[in-house]
Length: 136
Length: 362
Figure (tube, rainbow over the protein chains, first blue to last red):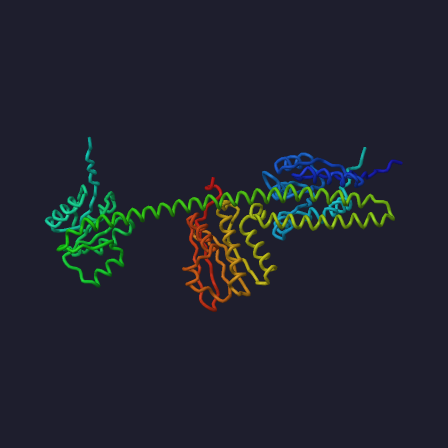
């Protein structure tokens, strides 16, 4: 008897931050989470939009302040795609004005980069990836 | 061998308002003897005078007080609409003291009686010296304003640059260290209570440093102004002010500020900050209402408090560098700043600047 098996795919995460220090560490922390693969990374807004649109990650971890264009622009662009990835804003600007703007534009989470980054790991761990179509 | 140097008489272009040619002739010869190379345009009617005023190109206006269809004071009024510096000298048969006083108050430079015509040359010379001094003052004011604008923008650029470095470089490095500390903490074997305690205290020390770095950067230049625009920055500043001083601060706005030019946004924001500082220091207010609106191609910021009310003397005679700075900042952008208040009825500051869009700023 052959059972149609539903195989769980890994969660693909894309990391956007202009700081190499922060990006490297986030990737190290995320890579230790079971069933997570790093789909890509970017340090400027333009590369982030292109990368996210081509790699189609499940989750985007997104910084706001970057040279040459803000993460808010990236958020606006990638939330227009269908299906849109889950977006976690991870920022050093933790004012309500930023939070409100990001939430209006469809951000799923808004976290302080320094004091709250561990939440990113929890959110990624708790994320249930979409099941893959049954294998042959 | 010696040479005698005779100075060439200076060319004096006179617009002469007079219906009696003989008077012009006499006056001109006095000026000639007084060392001027006189070039005269004589007019008598309002239309002719107006045409010459529009064309310009004269050094002094000499006018009879009474003319058949109008008078010298009306001519003065007409001249001053477009020209504030050119001297205006009344040449008249008689002039009662009170009329003379009225004339001077209205901006007549000097008056010469026709029976003391010899004084005309001295009067013109003094008037020209006065005009030149006024022009030098105006020029110098303009230069100072340009200099102040330049210093202002250099200061703003420097603050932005330092704020970015502090926030991005220091801030990101601290975040990295914080992440490392969290990683170490997670890897520590159970039972290592001393190590765990030390790693936790390190982590909280980093947190307070992060807060400090952010505060320094924000005090220099709030990133919110560049990232989210003027209205968000004003709202943020208002809520900071409220939580720091306990004075309630309400903001309303209809401004589509995404397109506002950066220097305009900066100026409005800095003037707003300065206004709040003044409210906290002097107003004894408990509430402030702020509105920032677009009105007929202008951005209008109004900040009204319910405090003791500024004395108008304080406004006009103020040597406060803060107030001067606010006015200059507005003037640089072609705007103006009006401060009004009455004892017990609060103070209102209204800033209005032309709405310059980002697209026009480049």
